[in-house]
Image (tube, rainbow, N blue to C red):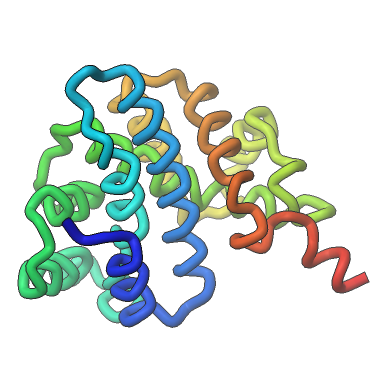
Length: 201
């Protein structure tokens, strides 16, 4: 099994953009939280669930900076993972997070990755427009309100957020709230703990 350090090294090898690295960390945090949640409710869950889910979240877009086109991402990344001996369970999850690959989302981990990907980015965008640029200022209501504003974070696919929660079998508001709480745990790493505003003033 590849560990978290190997996943971080892979991400930083291919991704120089700070915002893309932060997105990877955000999705990882949401995935770890869901890994814990679903492992707690499953007798067959292994103790590696949180680590495995986190790794998948961390590397799901590792090839995006170098290969951003629909023809290349995540196919090029999958080829790199295969070449370097990453396990099928991780490669399949990475492939399944993109709607257009034709890889179905069968496991809870695959469904969670799809559900967390766009939402993590959207919650981050909402935090960045708050006066304190802090996740502490973000709640489910503010996220839902911004989802209705088509001009806000227009690259984020609202349908993917809605369908992601549906696929996971979780109420949308509950899903949003759950991911907000997961992101608060790494607010400092994401630069969304309010310190950016304090430093600037």
